[in-house]
Length: 444
Ligand code: NAD
Ligand code: G6P
Ligand code: MN
Image (cartoon, rainbow, N blue to C red):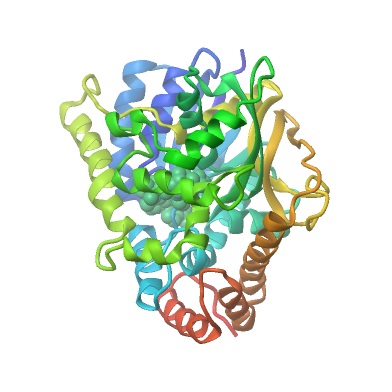
């Protein structure tokens, strides 16, 4: 069996140890020659990397391990780049969330004004990774989680059209794990789903058992009452099961009411229930604060403990959905499995009545040739109208980045469903531009 070499870009991410645990649990189906960590913040990365090096050594000392901030070292001789960088780190996420709230808008990492500001920061960082990969390992694939994935995907489609980049999201598969629990099934592969939309902006239209039974009636009924919240969210520690995620999962019941035939992505709540969201948010303590005091503290202290003890024997670090999905994708690309996976790809006729150049999230068959999307057909007016507005916002952000255009960025803010009017759009843009000077291109 071929042994792969991978680099994790954003080695200092809170999600890196989960990916390492997943990789090490799957060496029989995905053998590894080397694992490298790359980050532009060597100090942050070191905390995670020193621990992961021990975890790897204890599991399989034949795997080479390297941590580096040098792109030439990181990207040379790799088959797969797994990217999850956060340009501006949590300090900037906090501002993405808090500034909109001052203007009465939802403040969210990937939606509305916060997502636009984050998009303007991320494009450069992700394109840099693509360029390093093409320079040092031109045959490799870049699997990108870095958010906002919708905007990053539009940027890579447009600005690096020939590059082997696949943008992904763990939200739908995480929700699918809950659907499996609702149905009393065992694993995600027990169900086959049809889904379409933009990233963080989509709907399930069909869910069946492996033997063809239509499971939508049972699921619609459950979700209309409970959203996606299930017992294990209350009992177990999972990636999406802290208090804030549980309330997001529950809120899906209200979104589902808008189109009872389908099941919605949880992120639609920010567009349909902004007033609820704002009323339930502390403007002084947003999700970024929760994550810094929660996941970041937990992961970093677990890592420090491993480094102190020089063993990972009793660690509570574990695999999550984020990790399992990206490893499944690497396996499908490496071993030509034609596994069916939800990915963000160019529409190109997949949704018949939608912009062919839009980046859409749809089921694909994944082989070593990359993703082959499955046809969706014609979508209804409700979804089409929403998606057209949202995709235009995403495209305007990339226009603005590419052309350094203040005007286009103002249009993006004004068009976003989350921004109430053009006065607020301009105020938000001006304040966010000022705070993002270090990261955004200069606007003319
Ligand atoms: P984090 O801040 O813990 O980790 C990000 C790391 O990226 C940091 O160590 C930082 O130093 C590094 N970094 C920033 N800019 C860089 C650059 N230009 N080059 C190299 N490294 C750089 O963040 P996190 O909460 O662990 O999330 C990581 C990323 O994954 C975020 O973009 C997040 O939104 C994304 N994410 C996406 C999904 C999805 O569904 N697509 C799911 C989970 C997380
Ligand atoms: C989900 C989404 C990701 C997002 C993450 C944020 O997994 O799919 O795109 O980055 O949630 O989670 P957090 O716990 O950092 O708020
Ligand atoms: Mn996502």
